[in-house]
Length: 302
Image (cartoon, rainbow, N blue to C red):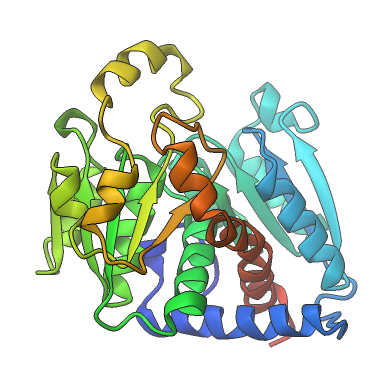
């Protein structure tokens, strides 16, 4: 594992290793045990998309590991004024020990890894959100103990979250059922990946997806970058919502996950969100622990 660019770069054993380390780091953090595993290391954090959870979790996580996080907006870098990504990658590799980037195009992340000589972590692109899904898997395992026999239901837009959840869930052995309007299905490469797994289904039927589900996921109808499509998407996604009727189709002890921010009464009702707030905010916290594990595995002394 040289980088974390997308979920399909990881196999089951690698994901398990990340989750095991994340659990250990979380437990140590709760006990006040310091773990300066990245002392003297510097992480450059490139933000072309704004964020609450990504910035704070990486910045605090890097501090807890004894390293230094360096925030870099597109206004701070020449990449925001047209410098080729391959030049940026080679320059930053001379200064930093690792790069986290939150941007639009997946190719930009791939090119940073290709031309740089240091680890690159995808903090989010329009295609993938691997850090979030590692935190999601960590949270599922905390609540359900393992992944064996679990059914994951995703109800919403076929966006970066859907792309990464499908790959992550199937890789870990879960059944994955999606309810997504046909014109908003996940990336074709993800659907091709899913063909290898008999425990995958996709349709527009939210109740079929939710039936006997152990964990239900959703995300906003219009992700960052789709603001111009809000009216169109609100019409297309009417009824594509996790509500009490959908929860009634799931298992009685089903958990709910949301990557946040949540638009209550759109993709999820306030009633369901608040009933499952503990799970959702445990998930948000686990972003930091999962990402600390990734940083240690990529940037720590081997």
